[in-house]
Picture 1 (cartoon, rainbow, N blue to C red):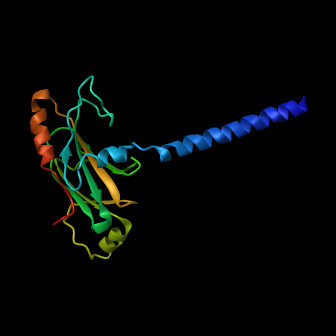
Picture 2: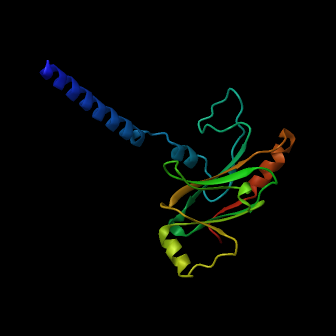
Picture 3: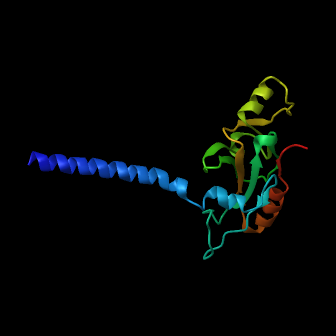
Length: 181
């Protein structure tokens, strides 16, 4: 009886370990990820307004159809990236993601920064240069330190009325994103 119980407990423990290992390694084997979908959009160093999500059409990024989205892919290996411009006077949010889809920074217009967004994204080495005052920045620039060089920025806008959506998306497309020239 005790021998059977020990085999049962051992089998459950081994099954649990195998289950956990499988769950943790399967995402690493996925070929189609958020990063691969963002990379396919050709949004390097520019704000790309995403097509509106409509009912019955594929929604691989799982976007909310009530919001307008802009995405920009940046690479910090050649220098810092900046996001700057004026967003509409309605709810908006900005989030910076790493390649794994993890948010490393997020803010909204409700954080008291108004309609103007001025964001500088730096890697660790660039942040050290910034601290040593070897990189000039403008007053009021929000500083984000990224743990990796490959990132994407997602801006969400919520138009109060559907009639305003196209104007909001036009303003979103005018946001500057990428290295300063």
